[in-house]
Image 1 (cartoon, rainbow, N blue to C red):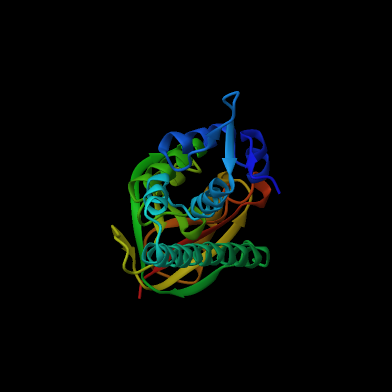
Image 2: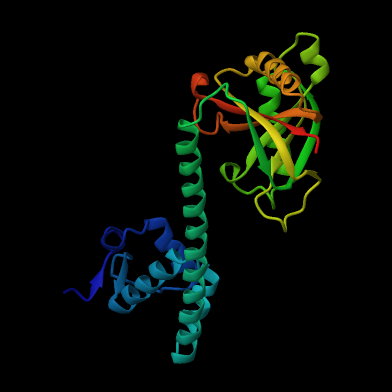
Length: 268
């Protein structure tokens, strides 16, 4: 084994760019020597430091933190650093567990959606659902996407992952009664946690529900059919119907794969 290595040898050996090695030198983290021609020569001591730098950088430590550690490396500092590493690893594990939970829920949602029969009417008993809302008259799909993004930006703390929350929209009954479909008065997110900040609540109770697949232009016909069913069954409805997007452009760009639920509350 050689005692000294040139910069390109070190770069290849460690997978560290030449510019990064020069940056470490400017910070004073490593101090390579020079040969008679002025070329950098990295010693075994430099190599052990590069091992530490690589490992700590992979855990998210800044170069400032790494330099402070290497400048006064001792058992106490090493113990403190190892404890910091342990905390970081636990945080990463928690983040991965949360991401895995989101994936599980999204997969379960798609599996359940595949078994739903559109056009069937059901009465669901649902708990209170806390929501955040953006009031806006929406007449095009592009406006809907923009409104959803605006709402997500407004509540970034509560809505960190799109796929982790149900998205809904209140339909404009006036437009539907006048023969205009796919028109909305507001868009909302149903929050997953009771502790999150919310603006309004879909109250607990019985809801008349049906699903449709495909383009949203169907919603006028579907809602008129749902209201007709309610009259036939002598159900008194409370408020305007709204849509919940079970499968939308978060999951597919094929409109025929969209799955939308229409809900409207039934008077107790």
